[in-house]
Structure formats: structure tokens, C-alpha cells
Image (spheres, rainbow, N blue to C red):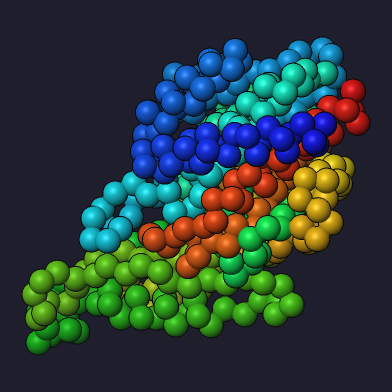
Length: 381
């Protein structure tokens, strides 16, 4: 089977890269991936694959095979872009590689279709919206699409700091992420009589110091930092009475995240109240840490070795980045789920407005995903 897959990928290199360029050029932000969804639907239709869209949000799920014949496996790609300032212009921009992810998933299915593979089981092809919002996976979960799956695979391009081009890992152990937004309310006063007011700038300074002073187990990767502050107006002689701030919290695992969030909340509220200001802190987005799934990771390991060679297999990276993919396993603990890490030579880094990577990595991704699907079906039928 791997020889047929490799031959197909070699013959269709131009088509694979053409799909990537189309998706890259026509990027759309979270929840607004309307034309992207239409494009994916048209491709599934061309392949003769039944699909379903959603009434209340973007995205599409394709269905190939029969659930009564064998295992049920999902293959998922995120589809949204970021809104970024790129070379002086604000625009939707695929700087996280979702254009590449869509390309690889779509062409892995196309490859298997065209080489005559017939799944002994059901494959659900999940094109998920709004990963960057942290809520896209939750929206798909609410539709019931993932319920009943035995296995779920995803893929993510990795930055050069983590993996070189030409290698792949059977998993990515993302950390947990929580984004918090706070408000501080005080009392305005004239700058000459600060004793009559409550200065929210003082509260913000205390909050920053308190967050930076939090201590956790140094053997576990974690961080909390204030990342946004807005306070006061245009007049420099008025004690400001309102401020907004944001905090980015990261942890290697979900247990540490729970502990860290409790400490962040206590530090923030306590510090903000030191001058009698009123403080409110609410989560805006969160993503859970990855939980290993040894069974499917072993299958993907075998696929990586056969697709790109023994030297192409590298250990799963532990990364502070977040991914809403991991909500699927949190919701369904018995689900064997993994996200393939793909070395692409990506630089300067993920979410950089001018991010780029070696497009030949897309060919490796198609091979790995195609063969992984085949192996799951063959081993578990």
C-alpha cells in the first residue's frame, strides 16, 4: 500500500501544492470560513463523499465507508486563519498552517480514493472551524459528530525551533492554555488631588507585580503573564477610574493549570483591591493539555517509518502552545486521539505574519496520514 501512496503523491505534487496556494490566498478568520467551507464541500463532492454542513456555524464533515463494517476513525483539520497586520495591511492570514492542514487531510483522502482503497469501517473527515478562538472543537462536539468514534487523528506543522524539515512525530503534547480578561474600576479625580480618587493605574501595577510573583513547581513548565493593559484617556491630569487587562496562562498539564489559575485569580483580585478598587476577572478562552493515546500513537509511528524512513521518526514534542483538538479526548476519554507533528522548516515561527515553510513537507504529511488511516483499518477490522 505504501508504494501506491508514494507513487500517487509523487504524481500529484503539483495538485497538492496548488490546493495549498488556493487556501493560503483565500484565508478566512474564525467563524467566517464561508468560502473555505464551500471549497471543501466541492472537493468532497468531486470525490463522491457524502458530507454534512451545519446550520449555526461553518465547517463540514465528510462520511466515507460504513460504521457497521469495522472501526470508526475521524481525521480532523482546522480551517480558520488569524487576523493580522501583514506588511502594513490588516488581513486574514494563515500563519498557523491551517491551510497546510486542510491540504494534507483533503489529499490524504483523495489519494486513498484514487488508488482504490475501500475502508472496512467508517472514516469521518472533519474540517473544523474556529480553532484560533478556542471554541471550534467544542462546537463540533456539540453536534455529536465525534460521539462513537474509536480513533481521531489530526496534524500540525511544527516550527523550526521544534523540528527540522523532513521528520515527524506520532503526537504533539500541547500544554493547557487559559486567556483571562480583567476589569478594574476606581474613582476619577483631578490629578492635583489624588486622595479624592482611586487610581486604577496603581491597581494595574500591583496586579502585574503580583502575577509575576506567583511561584509553582519549577520542574513543570508553566507561566502566567499580563499581556494587555488599557487605562485612562487622553488627558494626563485625570486620575483614571477604569482599566482593562489580559493575562495569558500556560501549563504543561491540566492539574498544574488548575492550581495556577487559582493562584492567578487570588493574586489578581487581592492586588487590585489594595487601593480599594473593584476587580473582575473572567476567562475568555481555554484549551486543555494533550493526554497520550498509546494505541493510535503506535500506529502512526509505524506509518511515519514506512512513509519517510526510520530517520524521520522523532519523539513527540512537549510544547507550551495550545490546541483545541485535545477537547475531543477530554470529552470522550476512551477515544484514541493523536495529532501528528510535522517537521516543515517553518520560520520565523507560528503566528508570525510572515511565516513560511517548505511545501515539500505537505507531501510527507499526505503519505503519513494516508498510511495511518489504512493501518488503523487493517489492524482493527
